Image (tube, rainbow, N blue to C red; front, side, top):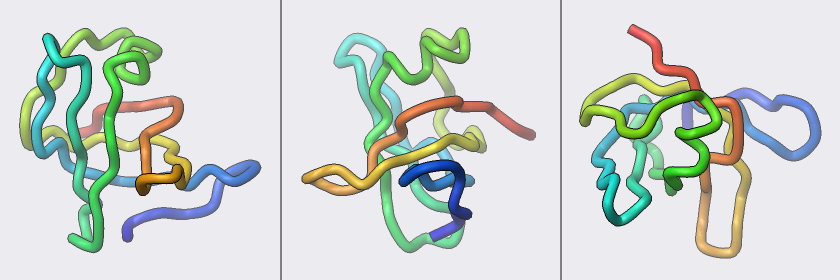
Length: 80
């Protein structure tokens, strides 16, 4: 996975948006090295001022390991 340890238990991930559905309120991102996906809730995007994000956008964010896998948790930032 494309990540580095940040503060606490959060991982800093560089990902690509696989899909995001604003009405459903979530989507998924894939690690750039192809080793896994992370859940992307709409609330996390809202923290950065996004209400939607295009498929294929590179997104850097902090993620945490949950009971069902990785989930974006804070500080998303789209990059080119």
